[in-house]
Length: 217
Image (cartoon, rainbow, N blue to C red; front, side, top):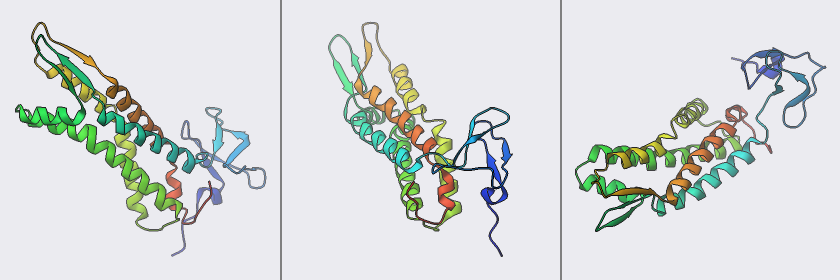
């Protein structure tokens, strides 16, 4: 069975902004090294047509590494401080999970652990796997890797759940009248981690999975 033709072979190019599939005229369209046709714009939204995401490898690696570096202080630094008349307690994500479990809230502890620890680590590992395998031009499990990317992209829509969980944790703690809660720097690093991992997922071009060859993009 012969390989299915690609869009470039059929003279088709899709707009990344509105999704309209446009037809190019062979010989009239000249694309630069980043797959950009400066002379052709989407007839519906006017955006410049691009066959590939510009510098996908470089941008995705940069965002992913930056997110991972910020993820370290997000877990090491305390995320909130609870203070009362006779006690001041600073909690990191892990210590908060342990405290919830010990104090009889295992369901909430599991939610916090999954949303704040498991999901970010899976995103780091999944995007790293996709980048390395695509860079090597591997033909290993391409359909499965494509589904993995769609899963990572879907999770990206819910990434802010990690930050919302922190707010939920604060709201569910029982305080007396003279108690208060203060956010600490860990929350800022955690929010930045979430944003950078979302941008890394958006920067990765899933069509690289199907190239089957090494590329220097």
